[in-house]
Length: 166
Image (cartoon, rainbow, N blue to C red):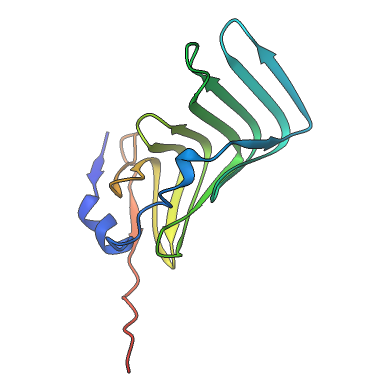
């Protein structure tokens, strides 16, 4: 397994002032789908067919989304999205948009982490990180990308910063 720790690259790609929109985690979660299945015992809701999820500036589109809630508080603990690909986007406090896509998306609210598996891509502006698995800690803007299988590689494109000239 080839692992590439790209926290330094992430700092170059995603500027340090570009934290995820700080109010997102306090917003309600809205989900539209073709159908849903509720399992009250496991506190799990499965949404099927052209699923569109929104929480503040967070958007997720997938063929299937599973939402896990905390049994005691009812708070959303984790959101899983599956598609070919499933997509994720979030506005940052400085107005930039972070885009992610993969066949599997796992968004842990408690850890504030997005894990993307299989054909994963994370981009902001024109800078891009691609790998089989990308874990992105949203609040601290750190990421780890790896190829998972022997011979798989992680690809990164870093665009030059545009300079404001007066």
